Image 1 (cartoon, helix red, strand yellow):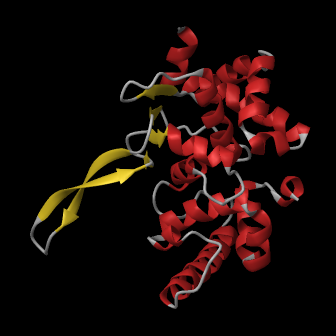
Image 2: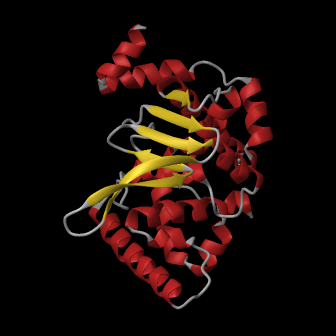
Length: 262
Protein backbone atom coordinates (compact mmCIF):
# COMPACT_ATOMS: atom_id res chain seq x y z
CA UNK A 1 0.00 0.00 0.00
CA UNK A 2 2.82 2.40 0.86
CA UNK A 3 4.44 1.86 -2.52
CA UNK A 4 1.15 2.57 -4.28
CA UNK A 5 0.79 5.82 -2.34
CA UNK A 6 4.36 6.76 -3.28
CA UNK A 7 3.56 6.09 -6.93
CA UNK A 8 0.51 8.33 -6.75
CA UNK A 9 2.55 11.12 -5.16
CA UNK A 10 4.75 10.98 -8.23
CA UNK A 11 8.21 11.74 -6.85
CA UNK A 12 10.59 10.63 -9.66
CA UNK A 13 13.13 8.98 -7.36
CA UNK A 14 10.48 7.04 -5.45
CA UNK A 15 8.72 6.00 -8.65
CA UNK A 16 12.05 4.72 -10.02
CA UNK A 17 12.60 2.77 -6.79
CA UNK A 18 9.09 1.30 -7.01
CA UNK A 19 9.70 0.20 -10.60
CA UNK A 20 12.98 -1.44 -9.60
CA UNK A 21 11.23 -3.43 -6.89
CA UNK A 22 8.61 -4.63 -9.38
CA UNK A 23 11.18 -5.87 -11.89
CA UNK A 24 13.13 -7.79 -9.26
CA UNK A 25 10.38 -10.38 -9.37
CA UNK A 26 11.16 -13.05 -12.02
CA UNK A 27 8.93 -12.94 -15.08
CA UNK A 28 6.31 -15.64 -14.73
CA UNK A 29 6.84 -18.72 -16.98
CA UNK A 30 3.06 -18.77 -17.41
CA UNK A 31 3.15 -15.19 -18.69
CA UNK A 32 5.94 -16.13 -21.09
CA UNK A 33 3.88 -19.06 -22.38
CA UNK A 34 0.79 -16.89 -22.87
CA UNK A 35 2.74 -14.29 -24.83
CA UNK A 36 4.47 -16.87 -27.01
CA UNK A 37 1.11 -18.49 -27.75
CA UNK A 38 -1.09 -15.42 -28.20
CA UNK A 39 1.25 -12.64 -29.33
CA UNK A 40 2.99 -13.57 -32.61
CA UNK A 41 5.03 -10.37 -32.75
CA UNK A 42 6.42 -10.99 -29.26
CA UNK A 43 7.53 -14.46 -30.37
CA UNK A 44 9.54 -12.93 -33.23
CA UNK A 45 11.44 -10.47 -31.05
CA UNK A 46 15.10 -11.24 -30.32
CA UNK A 47 15.55 -12.66 -26.82
CA UNK A 48 17.40 -9.59 -25.42
CA UNK A 49 14.50 -7.42 -26.58
CA UNK A 50 11.99 -9.82 -25.04
CA UNK A 51 13.81 -9.64 -21.71
CA UNK A 52 13.79 -5.83 -21.68
CA UNK A 53 10.14 -5.84 -22.66
CA UNK A 54 9.27 -8.18 -19.80
CA UNK A 55 10.35 -5.59 -17.23
CA UNK A 56 8.20 -2.94 -18.91
CA UNK A 57 5.25 -5.33 -18.91
CA UNK A 58 5.64 -5.99 -15.18
CA UNK A 59 5.64 -2.27 -14.41
CA UNK A 60 2.68 -1.64 -16.72
CA UNK A 61 0.57 -4.36 -15.13
CA UNK A 62 1.37 -3.09 -11.64
CA UNK A 63 0.61 0.56 -12.32
CA UNK A 64 -2.37 0.53 -14.72
CA UNK A 65 -5.94 -0.48 -13.99
CA UNK A 66 -7.85 -2.72 -16.39
CA UNK A 67 -11.64 -2.49 -16.39
CA UNK A 68 -13.99 -4.76 -18.33
CA UNK A 69 -17.05 -3.08 -19.85
CA UNK A 70 -20.47 -4.48 -20.78
CA UNK A 71 -19.91 -7.50 -18.56
CA UNK A 72 -16.50 -8.45 -19.95
CA UNK A 73 -14.31 -10.24 -17.40
CA UNK A 74 -10.66 -9.20 -17.73
CA UNK A 75 -8.34 -12.21 -17.93
CA UNK A 76 -4.60 -12.54 -17.50
CA UNK A 77 -4.31 -13.16 -21.23
CA UNK A 78 -6.05 -9.87 -22.03
CA UNK A 79 -3.84 -7.89 -19.68
CA UNK A 80 -0.64 -9.47 -21.03
CA UNK A 81 -1.50 -9.12 -24.71
CA UNK A 82 -2.41 -5.45 -24.29
CA UNK A 83 0.57 -4.69 -22.05
CA UNK A 84 3.12 -6.37 -24.34
CA UNK A 85 2.12 -4.39 -27.40
CA UNK A 86 1.70 -1.11 -25.54
CA UNK A 87 5.10 -1.50 -23.90
CA UNK A 88 6.84 -2.26 -27.19
CA UNK A 89 5.99 1.28 -28.30
CA UNK A 90 7.34 2.83 -25.10
CA UNK A 91 10.30 0.46 -24.67
CA UNK A 92 12.95 3.04 -25.51
CA UNK A 93 11.18 6.23 -24.48
CA UNK A 94 12.66 8.37 -21.65
CA UNK A 95 9.34 8.35 -19.75
CA UNK A 96 8.48 4.94 -21.09
CA UNK A 97 5.72 3.89 -18.70
CA UNK A 98 2.88 6.08 -20.01
CA UNK A 99 2.90 8.34 -16.92
CA UNK A 100 -0.33 10.10 -17.97
CA UNK A 101 -2.22 6.83 -18.44
CA UNK A 102 -4.21 5.34 -15.57
CA UNK A 103 -6.89 3.06 -16.97
CA UNK A 104 -7.49 0.67 -19.85
CA UNK A 105 -11.17 0.03 -20.55
CA UNK A 106 -11.88 -3.12 -22.56
CA UNK A 107 -15.17 -3.80 -24.35
CA UNK A 108 -16.03 -7.26 -25.71
CA UNK A 109 -16.81 -5.86 -29.18
CA UNK A 110 -16.96 -2.57 -31.05
CA UNK A 111 -18.91 0.00 -29.07
CA UNK A 112 -20.89 3.20 -29.47
CA UNK A 113 -19.68 6.65 -28.47
CA UNK A 114 -21.26 10.09 -28.71
CA UNK A 115 -19.30 13.01 -30.09
CA UNK A 116 -20.25 16.61 -30.85
CA UNK A 117 -20.76 17.34 -34.53
CA UNK A 118 -21.21 20.80 -36.04
CA UNK A 119 -24.44 21.23 -37.99
CA UNK A 120 -23.61 24.76 -39.08
CA UNK A 121 -21.70 27.75 -37.77
CA UNK A 122 -23.89 28.02 -34.67
CA UNK A 123 -25.40 24.61 -33.94
CA UNK A 124 -23.73 21.50 -32.53
CA UNK A 125 -25.42 18.17 -31.86
CA UNK A 126 -24.29 14.81 -30.51
CA UNK A 127 -23.47 12.17 -33.11
CA UNK A 128 -23.38 8.43 -32.36
CA UNK A 129 -20.40 6.54 -33.76
CA UNK A 130 -19.40 2.87 -33.67
CA UNK A 131 -15.69 2.52 -32.87
CA UNK A 132 -13.19 -0.17 -31.87
CA UNK A 133 -10.94 2.04 -29.76
CA UNK A 134 -10.25 5.47 -28.35
CA UNK A 135 -7.42 7.22 -26.56
CA UNK A 136 -8.25 9.97 -24.07
CA UNK A 137 -5.08 11.76 -23.09
CA UNK A 138 -6.55 14.24 -20.59
CA UNK A 139 -8.60 11.54 -18.85
CA UNK A 140 -5.66 9.13 -18.78
CA UNK A 141 -7.64 6.35 -20.46
CA UNK A 142 -7.39 4.02 -23.44
CA UNK A 143 -10.50 2.18 -24.62
CA UNK A 144 -10.22 -1.03 -26.67
CA UNK A 145 -12.49 -3.67 -28.21
CA UNK A 146 -11.19 -7.16 -27.43
CA UNK A 147 -12.80 -8.71 -30.53
CA UNK A 148 -10.76 -6.34 -32.71
CA UNK A 149 -7.57 -7.14 -30.79
CA UNK A 150 -8.10 -10.86 -31.39
CA UNK A 151 -8.60 -10.26 -35.10
CA UNK A 152 -5.36 -8.26 -35.17
CA UNK A 153 -3.51 -11.13 -33.47
CA UNK A 154 -4.77 -13.58 -36.08
CA UNK A 155 -3.52 -11.39 -38.95
CA UNK A 156 -0.58 -9.69 -37.33
CA UNK A 157 1.29 -8.54 -40.44
CA UNK A 158 -1.53 -6.73 -42.21
CA UNK A 159 -0.53 -3.28 -40.94
CA UNK A 160 -3.60 -2.92 -38.74
CA UNK A 161 -3.26 -3.08 -34.97
CA UNK A 162 -5.71 -1.43 -32.59
CA UNK A 163 -3.37 -1.48 -29.59
CA UNK A 164 -0.48 0.12 -31.49
CA UNK A 165 -2.87 2.71 -32.88
CA UNK A 166 -4.43 3.84 -29.61
CA UNK A 167 -1.21 3.76 -27.61
CA UNK A 168 0.55 5.79 -30.30
CA UNK A 169 -2.04 8.46 -29.52
CA UNK A 170 -0.89 8.32 -25.90
CA UNK A 171 2.64 9.10 -27.07
CA UNK A 172 1.73 12.11 -29.21
CA UNK A 173 -1.26 13.28 -27.12
CA UNK A 174 -3.37 14.05 -30.18
CA UNK A 175 -1.22 16.45 -32.21
CA UNK A 176 0.73 14.00 -34.37
CA UNK A 177 4.14 14.92 -32.95
CA UNK A 178 5.61 12.74 -30.18
CA UNK A 179 8.24 13.94 -27.73
CA UNK A 180 11.55 14.00 -29.61
CA UNK A 181 15.10 14.42 -28.39
CA UNK A 182 16.54 17.42 -30.24
CA UNK A 183 15.45 20.44 -32.24
CA UNK A 184 16.98 18.82 -35.32
CA UNK A 185 14.75 15.78 -34.74
CA UNK A 186 11.67 18.03 -34.64
CA UNK A 187 12.69 19.75 -37.86
CA UNK A 188 13.28 16.44 -39.62
CA UNK A 189 10.01 15.05 -38.28
CA UNK A 190 8.05 18.07 -39.52
CA UNK A 191 9.64 17.91 -42.97
CA UNK A 192 9.22 14.18 -43.54
CA UNK A 193 5.75 13.80 -42.02
CA UNK A 194 4.37 16.88 -43.75
CA UNK A 195 5.68 15.63 -47.09
CA UNK A 196 4.40 12.08 -46.55
CA UNK A 197 1.02 13.26 -45.27
CA UNK A 198 0.50 15.44 -48.34
CA UNK A 199 1.57 12.55 -50.55
CA UNK A 200 -1.04 10.31 -48.92
CA UNK A 201 -3.74 12.94 -49.47
CA UNK A 202 -2.72 13.23 -53.13
CA UNK A 203 -2.68 9.46 -53.66
CA UNK A 204 -6.15 9.09 -52.20
CA UNK A 205 -7.46 12.03 -54.21
CA UNK A 206 -6.29 10.29 -57.39
CA UNK A 207 -7.65 6.90 -56.35
CA UNK A 208 -4.24 5.30 -55.96
CA UNK A 209 -3.61 2.32 -53.70
CA UNK A 210 -1.41 3.00 -50.67
CA UNK A 211 0.27 0.78 -48.09
CA UNK A 212 -0.65 3.39 -45.47
CA UNK A 213 -4.25 3.01 -44.34
CA UNK A 214 -6.42 5.81 -45.77
CA UNK A 215 -7.62 6.61 -42.25
CA UNK A 216 -4.20 8.18 -41.74
CA UNK A 217 -5.34 11.04 -43.98
CA UNK A 218 -7.88 12.16 -41.36
CA UNK A 219 -5.41 14.47 -39.60
CA UNK A 220 -1.73 14.46 -38.50
CA UNK A 221 -2.53 12.67 -35.22
CA UNK A 222 -4.24 9.79 -37.03
CA UNK A 223 -1.39 9.76 -39.55
CA UNK A 224 1.12 9.13 -36.75
CA UNK A 225 -1.00 6.35 -35.25
CA UNK A 226 -1.52 4.66 -38.62
CA UNK A 227 2.13 4.80 -39.70
CA UNK A 228 3.08 3.32 -36.33
CA UNK A 229 0.87 0.32 -37.14
CA UNK A 230 2.47 -0.01 -40.58
CA UNK A 231 6.00 0.38 -39.20
CA UNK A 232 5.61 -2.48 -36.72
CA UNK A 233 3.53 -4.86 -38.83
CA UNK A 234 4.46 -4.17 -42.45
CA UNK A 235 8.01 -2.91 -42.10
CA UNK A 236 9.38 -4.16 -45.43
CA UNK A 237 6.71 -2.41 -47.47
CA UNK A 238 7.06 0.83 -45.52
CA UNK A 239 10.84 0.81 -45.94
CA UNK A 240 10.53 0.10 -49.65
CA UNK A 241 7.88 2.70 -50.49
CA UNK A 242 8.53 5.32 -47.79
CA UNK A 243 12.19 5.01 -46.73
CA UNK A 244 12.41 8.42 -45.04
CA UNK A 245 9.26 7.72 -43.04
CA UNK A 246 10.63 4.35 -41.98
CA UNK A 247 13.88 5.98 -40.91
CA UNK A 248 12.32 8.63 -38.66
CA UNK A 249 10.09 6.02 -37.01
CA UNK A 250 13.10 3.76 -36.52
CA UNK A 251 14.93 6.68 -34.95
CA UNK A 252 12.01 7.68 -32.71
CA UNK A 253 11.11 4.21 -31.44
CA UNK A 254 14.75 3.07 -31.52
CA UNK A 255 13.48 -0.18 -33.00
CA UNK A 256 14.13 -1.80 -36.36
CA UNK A 257 11.33 -4.27 -37.16
CA UNK A 258 13.14 -5.35 -40.31
CA UNK A 259 15.58 -7.22 -38.06
CA UNK A 260 12.92 -9.55 -36.69
CA UNK A 261 10.23 -9.51 -39.38
CA UNK A 262 12.48 -10.46 -42.32
